[in-house]
Amino acid sequence: MPISQRKKGDKVSKQYKVAKSLSQAKLSKSRSKICFTVVALVLLVVVVVFITTPLGLSSGESLRTKTLRGGIPDYKQVSLLKKVSLFNLAGSVSGKKCAKFDHGDISPAEDVTSVFNCNSEAGKCRWFYPAKFFDSECGVGKEYYHLVEEIEKKRVKQKLWKGMPLIILPSASLNSEMKDMTKVRNGVPFPNHNISMTHIHKTGGTSLVAAFAEVKKKGGRANRNTVYMYGQWEREETFRRESAKLLSGAVKYKSEWKENEHTLIGVVRDPAERFISAIGQAMGGIGSRSNGVQRWLKKKCIKKTSKETLRCCVDLIKNNGTYVEIHFTPMALEVAFATMYKDIPVAIFPFKEVPTLMYELGAEPHSMKKNGKKMKTDQVLLDMSIDDYDDDILKNVCDIFRLDVVFLHHIGFQTRCDSIL
Image (tube, rainbow, N blue to C red; front, top):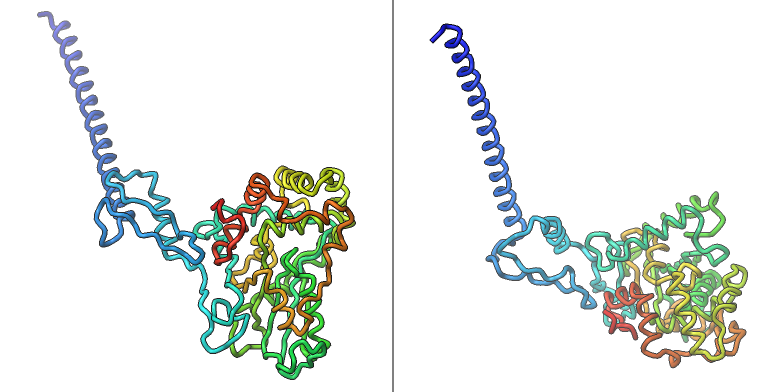
């Protein structure tokens, strides 16, 4: 073979060997990547199984569901799957966290007898922790956390409740030396304690606010803080700081009080009853006559009968939202807003206990600062009652105020809407 041909053949052979070597190197590198990926996936599955399987339970068993007061489950019951999906990792970690979540101490004080000592034999109230309830990860009302964000954005942008009543926190310090000027206590001395209130609209709050103010005339101390006032942005941060200072002293009821400590109360009402009261208020009640909503509501919904009027109002709020008028705001959201989302306890009383609270403040138990019947200028509003609800109207109202149904069920109060849960 000529020398030139041998050289050419040797060159081709060398190129082939180099190409083969490079190909083998790439293949080896590719196999290494595959092996590494497989090992990583195996380790990840082992970690997932370890996280999602509680100690003492074998695969296939079920996690026990911790039931909270009011029958609301702490977290949904889940099964330990033999084949673990990677997509369940985040939910499993959240489940473990929520299983230990503190929903608030609802136990009563053992050394005191009072209607304000919630969950005790003498207590007429139930403890509620709004910040815990609305916790975005583990709260019983976590699916409504977006409403908390929404209402706060509206406050900051001054687009909340234009021309409507203030959000206030009346407070009072009572003592045994106070005078029973109205003689409603029949010589029974006032207790030594500090009480404050978040005014939940359409639950007898106006009468109670007046009763708080009257404590000063009887020899106690009374004050009123403001949480929100439309159109007062320059002043708002000042009075919100004062309100925050007051709220930081909110505690469960006790026998001995520090100067800054007080028990914060609120009154709630069946959502279906409250909605009817809110309609009458929004269509001409004191505090709702200059915001423009009154005329709009009347033009849209005053019909020939009270039932037709009720149905129209339900549809209107369902389509436009509860922000159209402050008195339609869900009660749980009002409490969270008024307490400025602080992690504090609130003593929640049912509407039927308003006379009891009036008595405790030394006021005539059945006196009313707002008479609903006198505020209603149309006969259909005067005629409107709980009897105007049919199954369809009631269901729609319950759906609108489902947040309140969950809230009330959570603390142990029954409503006409419990069937939707």
